[in-house]
Length: 144
Image (cartoon, rainbow, N blue to C red; front, side, top):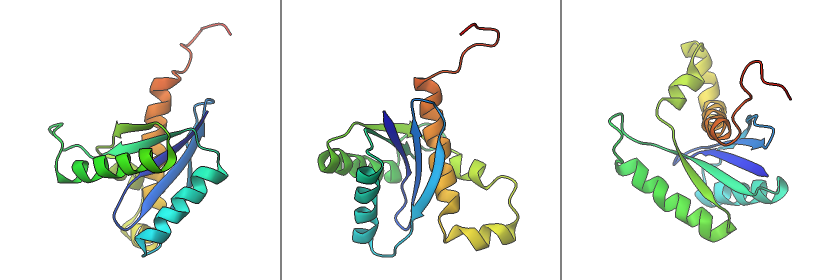
C-alpha cells in the first residue's frame, strides 16, 4: 500500500507519502501558478510513487459543519477518483496548517510559505492521522 496525503489549496497543493509502516513524510509541494501544471505534477507523483490510495484533507468548520471550501474539496476528491481510479479518503484537517506552522517565526513563515513547505507539512499531518487510525501502534508492553 502506498498513500499520498494531500493538503489541497487553490494556489498550492501540499503532498506527503506514507505506506503500511505508518509514517507520513512530506514531499515537495506543487506550487506552479498554472492549475493545469499542478494537476500534471499530481498525476506524475501518483504514477512515480505507484500510489494505491489518496488521503485528502477535508476542511470542516470549527463546529464540524461543511462550508464552501469543503464543497470545493468534495469536487476535487471526485475528480481524483475519476482520473486515477483510486480510493480517496477524506480526513478532518482542522488546525493542521496551524500545527504545521508551530514553532516558526514570522520571518520563517514569510520565507517558506510560497515554497509550499507548510502545505506539505500539513499534508503529512493529515496523512499521519489517517495512518494512525488505519495502522494503530502497538500498545506499550505488547509483545511482538
